[in-house]
Length: 388
Image (tube, rainbow, N blue to C red):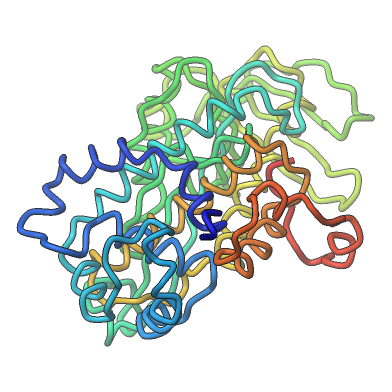
């Protein structure tokens, strides 16, 4: 008898099953459930993410053809399309959200000392949102515009490891800046945001919480200069000023001083104006911090390119959120596997290998590290690099 385990089963060993059961119990996810458990549901959706399945029928067909191996892969029930569809519709999406946060906490511990391009001891976060378009006729709950539906993925990305430390899924009508109300600021941390998040009352709340922010000034920004600091123009910094707001209501919302830095990118020649409440870091380092904000854009692009988050297996709000949270969990799982197995392959390469080896009975370390990826990575010039 062949007692070797499939790559899929070995991959699932990296997940804390006990923590998943706690999440299920918290929301009574298996109340009156007889056969198809929440764990079976998670395995089906994780399998779909890893193998790029297009539909529920696609998932059912691929798993049923391997019926004899399902038990050894962790499944306790053979998935049927209608059963999976109903589970996605009625089982609380918060089960999978909480479990994804458990994985994120584990991964952030492993990546706590990763470099991200700026030598800084404090934690640095990049905040942004990405819109996923939906058909309003099929998703009437996801109202965005008159004839268009959408959901937004609001993400606070920890730049040490490119891991989402805070994530909220809303309809497209929710403005990005409203998410600042839900943040719990971390003392001493840096929050990097684009100018869509410039709301002086909310920025002042961050300031009072003793957190730092770096953002860009809007074109109609009205201020009064108090004094200027010396700058080295060879770094691209043109001026470094201490200012206060000039208009009545903005100054009422933010009565304290701000730091305004005008910077010209030496490569593109683009002129940028930064605002921050940090007065200790050199001006050129503030510019470097804002440049790191691009990592959150790469995070969204990577998810949309390599995971199933643009086409959904169900039309209900619960089904959409369940699929999105399982996709996040798979993303973090790849990060955990890469770190714990000390793999040099990129996340893209790991996903590609897993997609064709899940049913193989090969040691997972051998499957993921048994080939030379250098040539293939150079050929994929349009692929994104994360987890450096």
